[in-house]
Length: 333
Ligand code: MRU
Image (cartoon, rainbow, N blue to C red; front, side, top):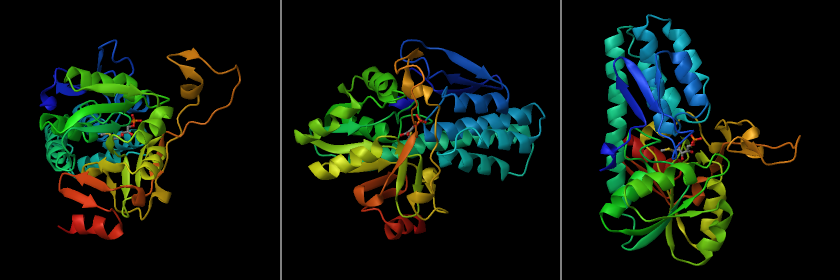
């Protein structure tokens, strides 16, 4: 399946980290190489690599790079932790690396590889759990990019879509373009087309009209941080989709490994939301589209309350009707 796809978002060889530059996909395939945590932090901030699990894996390799170079690991931790605030996988991965209590570079590289491999395995497990909820012949709607590019491989929401398509449950995927950064148009459409999965690209504003036509079974999305009560931060626009879905009787599925949960946070109100440069809104492909001097806002994520979510799929199983109780039950297993 697609963790053996023809592309790799993240690769480690010759004691260097290699990242497929997601800023220039799908029209250019450029791989950039890294040898320091500071440069890896810049790559995360600038979106060379993005997607919560992929950010965590990349940060782990970034930390290992500074170990290999004999640099200060506390400084490596700090610079990587400051790269992007919302995806908790980043902090989870850094904690796991730092808690090894070793500066042995080979042990740290091995741990980063393990984090990478475990993520692929989690995605394959989620794929099976999530696919089982999808009726045969379904049309589904997804947002942002949650595929092999956003993870160690296979994907979270897109992994479920891949697994369900392989089980002949999905006949059509609708991918929201995901303004302003266009992860849906540039990355999801490309990934699905690589795998010959039927995809139609949708302008974000067309979702309500599509849902009203009544043939979408599920909205399937990923997550950047899930609070203890199931409130879910994901790409800006997810909350609007969940509200629209509720109105039209479309179900909402969130796919995320347990590394995306932050049980220290009681509800979504406390999830930090990244504000990205407003130039991402006022420009398109480097070309200014708004009037000169136009102000803008650019929150990169929003929070969907758990009562708008029908199921959260993890590698340990699924949480139906997410709430503080049902989330706690999954983690108590
Ligand atoms: O800003 P991005 O592209 O890093 O945002 C990505 C998302 O919001 C994804 O839906 C989320 O990280 C899950 S990826 C498996």
